[in-house]
Image (spheres, one colour):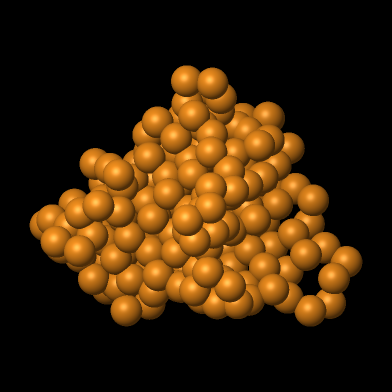
Length: 204
């Protein structure tokens, strides 16, 4: 599982010229450029730079987003691990072994964490506007956003988030309040109207 997910779960909570925006106008313009599809899938490369540690930690894998069901984040290297995020729970597995399971019924912050993860990976930037203020720009089909937490509790964990993309979110940089930096590049991204048959059981 991505370390930032664990910390969140436990501690939480087409224009030609470049245009610069703030807050609502930016969220709306970026949202209008994102592909509106129920399913998003692709590959990721994650680099995590820990404060005080010279060598970054790198992992690669695949992700699957069903906007109705949740997010599957499957690390393949350096070791296999699967994180499943739904509206009701967050589950981490190493193979068949459950390493962590948090339920929204028992951990109220799970709902908040799930909402944040859904918004980041599904491209629901409008929902992010409820938790973050933003500055950024739109240049043709490409866009970038710098998000700052509105809530003081969230700010104790996250210093800021940088997002870049076009039709989908392509890059996420998450700066923690402790100084750790997590960078995620998403590539080979595709969208679909429904899960493939071999994906249908992923959220069970």
